[in-house]
Length: 223
Ligand code: 5RP
Image 1 (tube, rainbow, N blue to C red):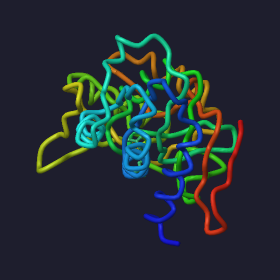
Image 2 (cartoon, helix red, strand yellow):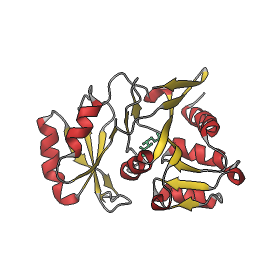
Image 3 (cartoon, protein in one colour):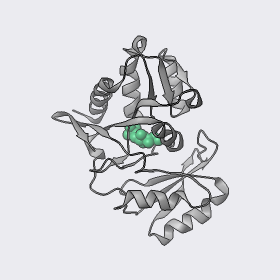
Image 4 (tube, rainbow, N blue to C red):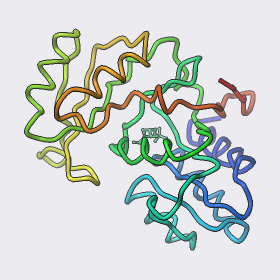
């Protein structure tokens, strides 16, 4: 099975966690796009979705799934999203699609985080994937310096020759060369730096379940 097929497999498998009659939290990315397609087949059984990006909102609406503002909804039973890396404790690196801030917000209002990923995303230690950090643009240089002191090499993410602008009007720094053996303390530390909007380590908002697409089928990891 190729990567695209594995993504479709876990996107379909995630439907078992969607609670009929409720609103579901929806992440962002190519794996979630497969989940959104699958979700459309049961759209009459759910109230709608809270979305983590403008891109997912557009896809949900195009398929006739109502999208609610997160402020209108107190608690979600489940949030379904992909990851760039996930370790054996359910800690993740996210933000490859630049949606990390809204992803963390929707994850925080959800009782359960179900991560959907192909097996290439499972790692022993987080850090091989360049760590995305959403920042206030005027703080970029100083934050890059802070990461350099930790041995990381940060660069502002570019798009079409300019700094990429997120859905929240901010920039992304991608940091290479880090090893993150203690994601909980790393997330707590970096989150306090002035100008950091969101660090792409999801340790406080970790996954409780990972549906991992493998050549032998979907493996369910529980944390
Ligand atoms: C977007 C994310 C995505 O979940 C992550 O990048 C994985 O994406 P994909 O499913 O396309 O591999 O964090 O900000």
